[in-house]
Image (cartoon, rainbow, N blue to C red; front, side, top):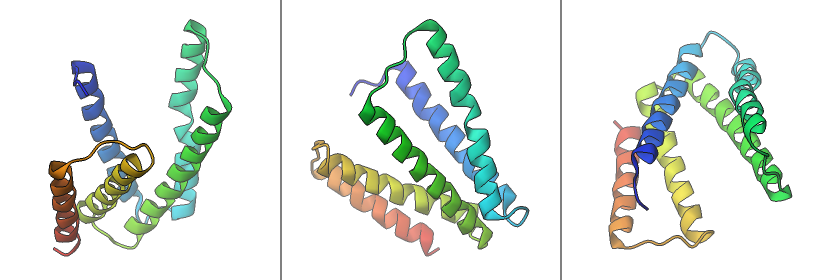
Length: 144
């Protein structure tokens, strides 16, 4: 994969927004019921993609397939459940500096395994060593 400036920007923007989202969830700990916080998140989360979809539709046709709709719905369910879990985690008093890295790195490991097992993405010894180091990192952060 070639890393263009645009790709690097999207990586960095994604990291920044994701980190801020976890920070925001931690800020709500003890200030709102996790269920209600998750519901508010879900309601408000519709606004940016709604505006983006309207803007895109005004400039080009939208691609719609059954698989695309199905997997988008599954993604929404997964992120809704995930957000609820993070609300619950932080409501239990878990520190942001522990909860976020453990959950995110664990999720990264699961996603990487899906990539290898389902999509048959390549791997090598360097990848396995990196994966093992990430697992050790998760353990060290979780047990500090």
